[in-house]
Image 1 (cartoon, rainbow, N blue to C red):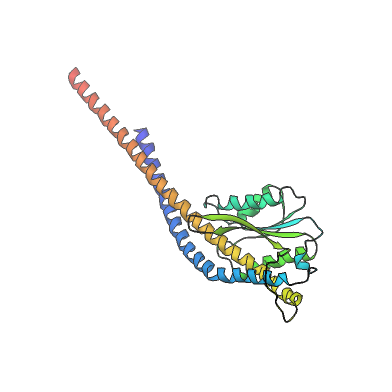
Image 2: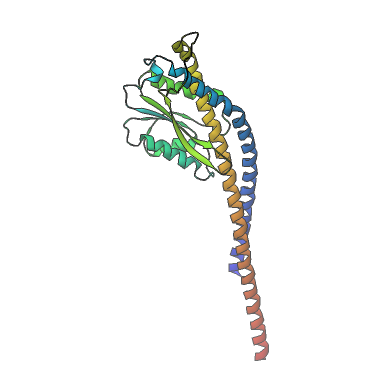
Length: 275
């Protein structure tokens, strides 16, 4: 009977967990719909901004400070993760990708967006120059602008020679891709002969801060959609696993109950035969 009681207790416990994972799945699905809507509305603008700045950069002066690597060999890495777990390998994959860029560098700086990334680099004793929390699930352009200005100041002041961005690209609900790109110095793209008014350098001085902020904002939106998608998928898998576990435990319980009934009947028959 003690075995039957313990099995029933486990069934109730798994059932409670199942209710939680099912609720988290629904919440993540709702957040994913909002995140995808924000991403799909902003993605064309982010891509066109990046493309336009690179075309202008092709005609800019080679001495423009935004296109020259600094003398300092240190890197600044902006790593975008989540504030919470229960989303599969989303946080770990992004953190590992960022760490792979700086693990051999001495004094490289980390700008962490998300608690999980901050904790990852803190455990590995990397220098976190700035940390942001509470912005990963629902990012705003103002958040990206602040992060971008921190990165630009590090680059302009010569504290780092390059700035890299690590994030997770949303391909589909089931498919994500950890990605990284160099923000500074900016890589120029191909383009035809173009005349600018004002000059290319004056135009870039105005556009580059907006370009950096826009690229970071787009990456935050991509990562937000990936986080919710990974959490929704993870909670759906956990719910299915709990159903299988409850079925298995129910089978064990029924067998234990049947064994107990059989044992009682055997005792009754044995007692009757003895009389």
